[in-house]
Length: 444
Image (cartoon, rainbow, N blue to C red; front, side, top):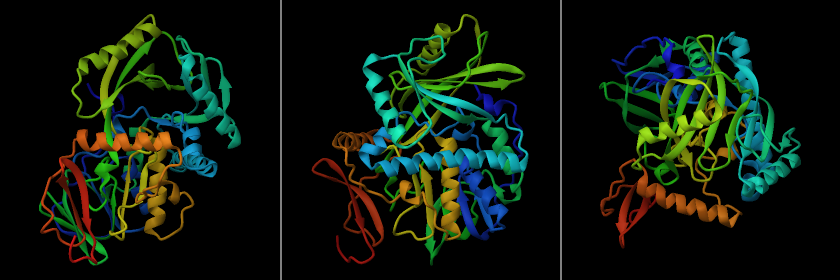
């Protein structure tokens, strides 16, 4: 079944690239990140094109639960321990700023997208998880954020502890995206798949499946998963996760946006569809590529619905893939230190509404060579040694799993003929090893 967000939306059929182009900026990817960045470039009259291999916003952006929140699970105590309290504070402020920027865009453009302020909650029904929530609350107190610690949430299920983030938001993402598209649709090329990226001085040439080339001074890779493996090596730092959603009508409303910190994961929020109150129930996450029974995933969500509501009807079912970063922080900024003027945004960890706005603002500032105070948080070329030993150990485990289960095909090659500025994966003593040869070396 289709996503609720895509059911009654009429995206215009946009042009397909059939000629060579030259421009200042090329954006690859027509999801909410690329669309938001395109909107900001258009407002400043910066020449650009955006290409999308399918239809704009037909993938993750059209299959989200569309919570606009800075409450990304229990993230802030982790950030304090793994990095610093100031790091956690800036991460919070970056996401709070994103909420307000989205609101300002909606207000300035007079966009009817069902935007609504809503409180957000993380809760548990497991007594063993109470300390986790209290530790998160303690960090939020240090950050001077107006969170509230509760002993239950207003849902028809057991809960023993929760954190409330007031004045967050939700909206209809496709209505929002459509309004942005209409401000620059002549700059967008659909059904235009990039198949190769090569350097052209300090700029780039993007070859497309259509046979047309785009020459640009600056390049943004805003696909869900970076389409170029090397030299960024993002396949070692990311993995993809599939989750499932059902949309139901029910005789009981819920006020607020909810997610638990337990296993299995449960996400809840309400919306309006054809003048009916509809509740979205999400969860049942697993690594993309693992063998699962999809019907069982939807059955499990329906079991949750039947436990919460006496009378309900399923209107929609859908699933989505999210790209997960190993250290819980998105990669936003320079694609690689070796690729000047190439930028990336990925690894939003299921929190794409605020992360996409943060990414659009950071990438826009990169393009116009303006400093952005949040750039350091999301440094996409980072390799930080996390202070928290347990967190670092888990990161290494996930990295190994990522190489094994990532759906991207890893090529095993011989490095004898490796050219400068290129990297490959080789097999050494039955282990996968990444090898990169910089531009200064004649030999490995």
